[in-house]
Amino acid sequence: MMDADTMVLPRLGPADGGVEDPWGEDRSPRPRRAAARVTAGATRWRIAAWLLPALLTGGLGGAGLGTPGLRTEELATWRAATSPWRDVWAGDRTLAPYHLLMRGWAELFGAGDVALRVPSLLAMTAAAALVGALAARMFAPGTGVLAGALFAVLPSATRYAQEAQPHASALFAAVLATWLLLPVLDRPTARRLAAYAGAVVLLGLCQAGAVLLLAGHGWVVLAFRRATAGRWLAAVLPGPLVVAALLRSGARVDGGLLPPGVRVDPGALAATPRELFGVTVLGAVLAGLALFSLPLRYAAAICTAWALVPALGLLLVARVVPVWSPAGLLFTVPAWAVLAAVALSRLRAHGAVAGLAAVALVGAPAQVAVRGPDGHGQDPRRVAAIVDGLGRRGDGVLYGDPAARTLVARYVPADRRPVDVLATRSVDVFATRPGPDCGGCDVAPRRLWLIQPGHPTVGWAPGNGDGAAARALRAGYRPAQVWRPAGFTVVLLTDQRRTSP
Image 1 (cartoon, rainbow, N blue to C red):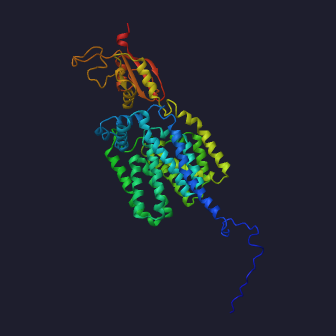
Image 2 (cartoon, one colour):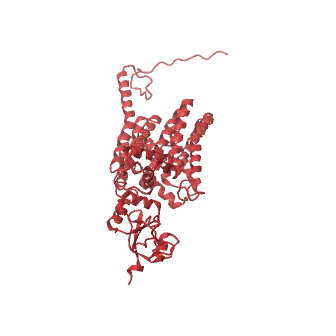
Image 3 (cartoon, rainbow, N blue to C red):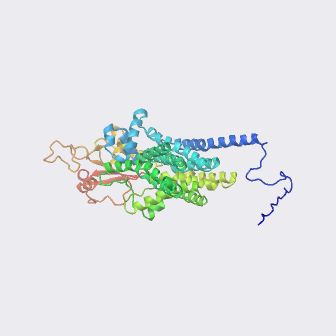
């Protein structure tokens, strides 16, 4: 059987006759300078991918940093930062690493409201820079600029950059762990695995619930790098072990081991987008843009797993244990920002800029609100102003929560604070004269302040419960005036036994 003759077809037309070469294989060596310019331009874009988000986040987070008062969780940080070292570890063990850090920070920079929030601002700024660099590494430098900028203009990024809580640190650790996961997926050397393991331990020390990120990472490993699953599992194991040790040693007073939250229900789920992104509409916009990042290619799959798998894991746990907390999922927000940036990067430059501007415009009212005196949902300085301005010498106080006691200690001068009648054994709050077993006791104050977080819906009628306030009401105190500053209820009670005719 004879081989078929080979036919050679001649080139039709000149090689440079306007034939489109989209891949650039046949470009002449002439544009070396142009290639150099392209390389220099790409370098500048890669620098912009981390520098611009860092500057945006630092500027937005630093503006009005000290305007909102410390909310109840931040007051716990202030208490830890101003307590003896041994007392810091005696508190909530899951927060002990963060509180120990803040205790050392306060030694160097003080425990003012701004000073306590600077570590969160620095962590969020570093996280924004790393978000941009991560997106540039996974996709393209322009996508990195968009991802970092989108993250920076979210009101939630500003809100938690201005909060003395470990959420910003946990978010930074999550981005760092994902950044270090990429080289592990590429080539899992011992050095790369050790660096990744360190980031995972840092993640667990910052926030126990943030280790749910590992579920997303594990899905990526099983889906794309199944051969490295064993080494990946060995690298991440120290992180959950550290968290388990903290949870085991840090059982709360109510016997719980997990951070407090709520049981998942439609109302809790509906409130999640607003808590995560600052505005509910922004949550819908970012989720819609994320859909255009599909199908699940390798790079997009990493961010999709980061965004969705931890939330699904927390949802499953919250169906059994009341641990659902939108703030606990803050570490997934960078993934949503990257996915949205991937969708916007498919548009022309002016379309991508318009999309970014639209996100910033929608979030602008929330950006303004978060810097108000009650921008964090509570107005502790207003509470202090009421007690300080209307208080009299000899007034007593009942606290409905330990955070209320810390609030007064933080914002009311020591010489103007009402007497904590339950903490002072020499005062019998329910007696108009000393009892037979307390001959040296002072009598109850004529005026009694009641301070507690939240806005109770029940009336101030005697006999509601067995708490100190209810017992005071049954003893003869009656509410003279009620204030409801954001996040708190302040009641002035007067002793009707000595004021009535």
